[in-house]
Length: 116
Image (cartoon, rainbow, N blue to C red; front, side, top):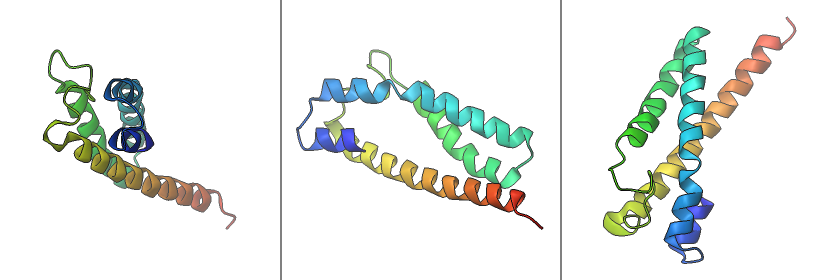
């Protein structure tokens, strides 16, 4: 979010912004896919179903990168067609999702280990 807002305010150029963001796309896809599969294996159905759409979206977004682009974030297209605003909106939604998941995981951890 900070890198995208820096690009929006012209504190950073598009090429360096996109290279910073693109280096985190593959670890995000792998990490989220691993967490989703672990929730399926451990039979946490609600959390699995909550994570499945986000993991699917991350994989879809990574696979559908047009050939010739630098990655999911492309410096030649980030200012075109309002992509910067959509990337900001997506980052804010993901932040909210990860905060929700953090507190759900924390609650599950505390409630499982609480003395009875």
